[in-house]
Length: 248
Ligand code: PGA
Image (cartoon, rainbow, N blue to C red; front, side, top):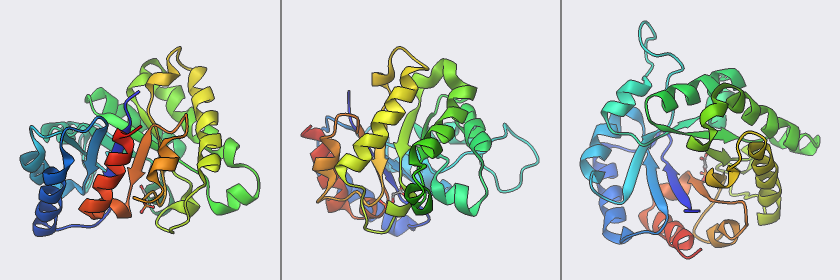
């Protein structure tokens, strides 16, 4: 299966900084074997469309509304993302779950809205440090993914899953390849119960993935790519991760 390297800029960027970053990425991207995408803050999606249209880099959002349209001040609908040709929408990032109270059910609705608009949801799951130490990692990620399978099980092969242990995000504390692989295998087995083709679903690892550790993580049998935060804000680092994915 093709690997996917997706950048998550989070709430960073400006018109000028994005332009410089994207031009540097385009200059070095070549013809990647892996799928590559950048997920930007909503106001910059039209800029990404202009810069990336026709290039090997796709673009996407970091969230999408669980509602179709109407009186939901501040929300951005899947149809609006479609207008800007977004290929992906991250849903259920731990920062959304933690700071914006997103429940498993809401995350599943967001995934459903994205799919209905022809956008691939990148569904994030992951345990906190307390949950890992309590030995409930498997239970937590399975519960998070089960909500999505329950709602969109009929088209589950259209989603991307991202395993992001909360304790590894932005901390420089990466999960070991063995730790990550163990959870990815659990997720793959769970998907297998929902589809005869679980191998078609890309399961990304995220959490302090960088130019130095990408190759060993991506070499694991069930790690099909990366969701990259900090390192996606530096063109050379991001390009090195893409190169590591191309080399698999
Ligand atoms: P990080 O973020 O690479 O900066 O740890 C990953 C993410 O939150 O998607």
